[in-house]
Length: 574
Image 1: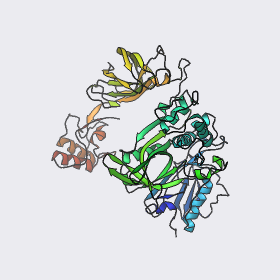
Image 2: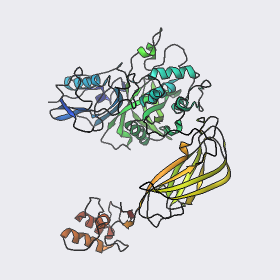
Image 3: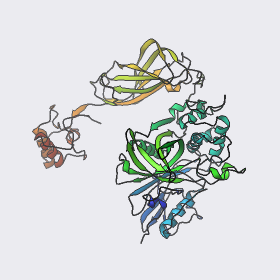
Image 4: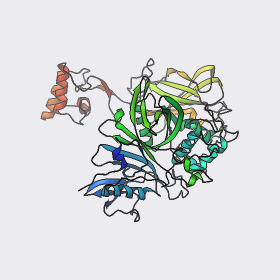
């Protein structure tokens, strides 16, 4: 008989914090996984493959998966043999699901063994100093007191592989470079990443020494890191953080710390996972129960007396989340101590490195957004109504297709000049079928961090049924000097399809009783002539076929009875 898994994770309702870690399931790998009985697993005897499933009485306990190819996002010294691992598993006899990332080849077996022991022996566990990505401040006043944002930046840059691309062997090495470069003042992760890539200081109090940063200037940081509000976003804010973390992004959290009613200031920590309650959808605030984090303040008391920050324990903490709504505030809190409460205010997410991430290749680009203007197209969208700013990607052959392009100045220098766009339409084979220039103005002025919308205009051509890509490009011939040119182009994929009314089986342009009759006759096997798309038009419940439920729903609709399906609405054939 199975014993209750008594990780500290199962005590979330009564504990406010615990230094715990765990490991298990990820996305399925190609090919069959090795199956290991829980009684036969040993951390000392590594499995034969990187991906394996641990079972107990033929029921899956843990699924272990290597989720990143060696060397792609590796930040350990042995880049040829290191990868990160993601954990995802249910806590037995609960509704709680654990998702955790940032584990490495060096700690996965020990963590897996610890979970198994807690499962089979009924014991709690708490793990530290197993190589988690967790740089620490020092206890002495040596220039890092207010650089929690730099520590969190270092952690997510390390995890996502960007630090390794710039030659940093560890998060501690990168953090010490931040310390050497910045004044010891407050800042934020968004501009910490901006300094790393492009030497941009931002609006925070902390300012870097001249000539520091800009380790990967061919990339523009604004294309890689995003900030999202958490203080008014409720569950949708944490859903963004969860989804990004699940997709391999680095995630940092900003919090405001209160002691009673007194705001003691902001703080930045690094997010590594969540415990969620699967009884609630991910849009419900009760879905998110706890969060895994590392904190640069958690062990700084040990870094004193000449001790190196690399020698202290790396600890991952688990904090129970409490939803809070008060006035405009709609977020979560957790207790750091009995007296201190952290209020989630913001999250910063960083795209992981890969060879496919676009970057500047033109020798014309200055790679200096501090001193050279830079215009990017963001956003660029399509619509079939020039009075409605709502993006569409499926159109009818009769539709006029309009585009809207926003020209954003992402540099520190005011842009003065004209705005011209070249619109190009290509078909699914990549052949250009249409191109046209558009001029917005002979002269405009766009201040830093502002954008100007290109007037809604028709592309001037109706497209037949098919798959297409529409691309807008600014400054295609590089006649205007810019920091970057690769962000001057945006593309949108679209489909042109014939439209139909859902429920209009006979295609007479209306939904009537004859349509329900035709569905019934088709089910009964009567010989009749219906085109191949009749199933699409009549499949109201989206079961993939015409059935009695479709006819019944249609009859209820015609009788003006309440139904849960949309009928008599325009759809497009796929």
